[in-house]
Length: 67
Ligand SMILES: [Zn+2]
Image 1 (cartoon, rainbow, N blue to C red):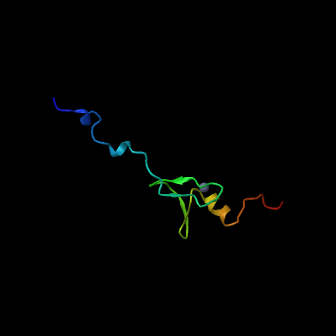
Image 2 (tube, rainbow, N blue to C red):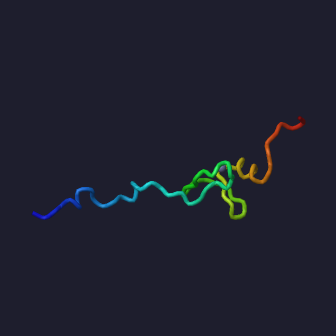
Image 3 (cartoon, protein in one colour):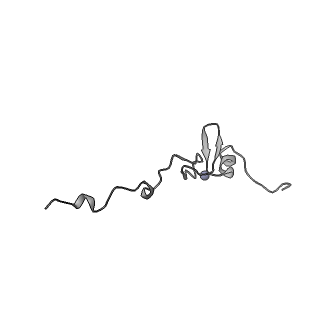
């Protein structure tokens, strides 16, 4: 009787693999992983998960005008 155990789980399905992050948000306080296909903001070679984090890292902050 041949050992068929190696067929029990089948071949690994690439769709089942969790996607590996390719980058992370450059904002130190965020560092959220960035996955392929995700919409991100680029500044030079830096990648940010949101426009707000890009602006924050550049030293910009959102305030209420006139205060
Ligand atoms: Zn971020």
